[in-house]
Length: 248
Image (cartoon, rainbow, N blue to C red; front, side, top):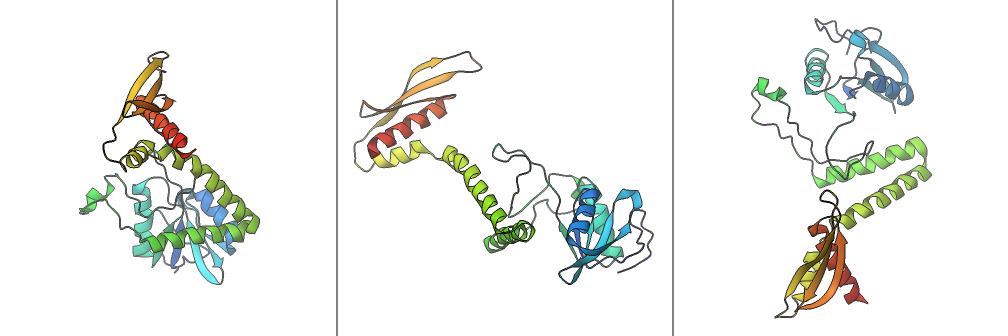
């Protein structure tokens, strides 16, 4: 809707704000989305260069607007859009930051929930900072929607390429997380009286870059060996070697 307001952040000119608003953090990303995906986009806000556009997507009026960096900035724009401009739904489409060895720059994460450790909510006496969690069905729908968007943007070959990249990139991570020690323990325990032990044979290298060699023994007899940058990694390698020998 079009509405004059006392807002110091949003001043609607030239176009109305739709009931549905997509919100990335970067206003230039909002401009990119509007120009690439919306029909006849019109800029409705330039205050503080927080660009906002309204256009048509598949016959439906949609707006896209930046919200800046951080929870407080998002809170200002979202609150005013809901309370002063009659917006009914806001869908955030921005990027996010996190610390995880398996996640690389520009990876796309489909999450069931996303919570914050910001103290922003304390000003409103919220009972907690944990967000509602989506069901697995909703998560699956989101994944399907992602691949559908890739298809619409780049065609079926692009979808195949992305799926293939995902499968290849996750295979090593899955391999690293496999617990060979537990698997080996389960195998040997099928017979009673089996004793599995791990023994360090050697260690080499400086303190900051050591390599360990471990031997895994079944009832005192060696059944596998493995090296690693830590004792735990070497034990896992030894267990893996033992399992591979057993399968031959």
